[in-house]
Image (spheres, rainbow, N blue to C red):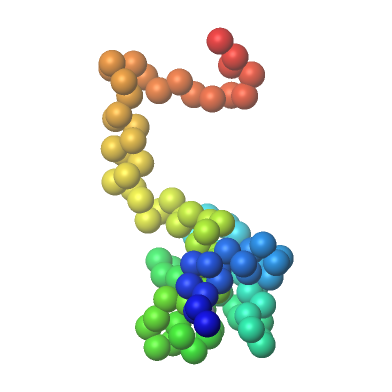
Amino acid sequence: MTRETLDAKALRYIREGRLRVVLVDTEHIEARVRGTDTEHVTGYERGGWYCDCQAHQFGRRCSHLAALQLVTVRPEREYPADRARRAQRAPNGRAPTPCFGNADP
Ligand SMILES: [Zn+2]
């Protein structure tokens, strides 16, 4: 019998509609993931990911959080250096073109 990997399990949770994101703002994410037998509260708050399941309490990566991380990015506040670097990376010294949706060339 092959054991399902954590990432495969996370993908399955999404595919089966077991992940519900209930709250998102600039620095807080909260979701419910229906695991094998219970629903877990998982999310991101004050710079850290959390999950109320046992695996996470013991410091292990859990499939609930993995599922949530597949559909979210960390709040931007975590990446000030990255954003600054990206802004400077305009090719040939051209200013990055802002995207307003109707700016077809
Ligand atoms: Zn968990």
